[in-house]
Length: 380
Image 1 (spheres, rainbow, N blue to C red):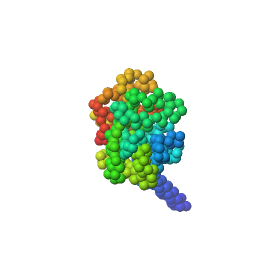
Image 2 (image 1 turned 90 degrees about the vertical axis):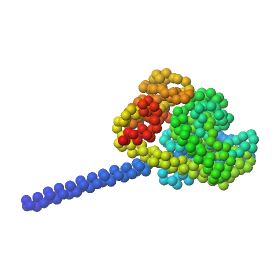
Image 3 (image 1 turned 60 degrees about the horizontal axis):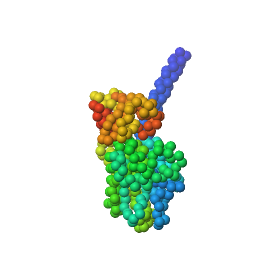
Image 4 (image 1 turned 180 degrees about the horizontal axis):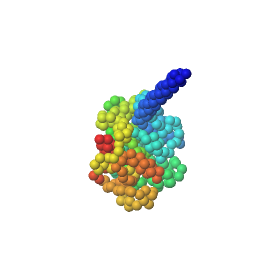
């Protein structure tokens, strides 16, 4: 009897050990699956913006070509092709003929934490001008291409309470662009790269007349916190080019050129850094502690052509504001930390105060350095 009892105890101990080992294995597998799902979820996010829509038809054409319809059809074709890539997530500002307020378009991109913002339009002119143009933000506020900017920005007047929404911004006034979005200034090089690839594809692949990469103060890309371009796919006021833009063949060729440019741009990021930026951040954040040497991180929140006193009342109650002059602009930063993980808390606080386009920048010896280089340094 004593032997049977002893065997039962041994049996339960063995069974308990077996169940415990199984539990540990399940936890480990669950951890691997969770990490794999997290890794796969980090996709390259592209926001596609079909210009105009609904009560806003876009550029007028005496030949009956509707910019809002052409832009939407091209966007849907671009999105359909990009969605075939498992590493890309596509977000649309609109997928139907609806009116989207100009201020909401960049908000959609910022909320999606997009890697690219691509706005698609058609051009117009009182002559028979033709050809493609791709615009990036005129961060120098030189008022170049002001008429194009004015035409694209005037949709603001179709919105209710636009004075309140746009803080007194007047699309007809060049002076309205004196205060630029710092976020876009930081992404100028990437925006120009994408714009150049788009125009190169238009010219070389489908033999369109490229009028080049240009800069203008366009509200829709003024407020985005990622590389952004606005594509004028051609002139609806040109009889033959308008017909091409309105055709299935033209829309397919244009969309294919844009898709190829986006993919080439994405691949160039991997080539230039040796690995994808999102992967760098993900890998480094697992090992990061205090940064070496004198690298610190700050949150860039605003810019102005005039020096503003760095008191909390000028920055919605935020204290620890610092200022740096670069060129003709004064740039403003919130907080300061040597620990990259702490920047998330600072960034969230700045966003709660209304600085939704804020972003992290790195400094070494009081000089701005590339964020990726700073993050990599923290892992060494």
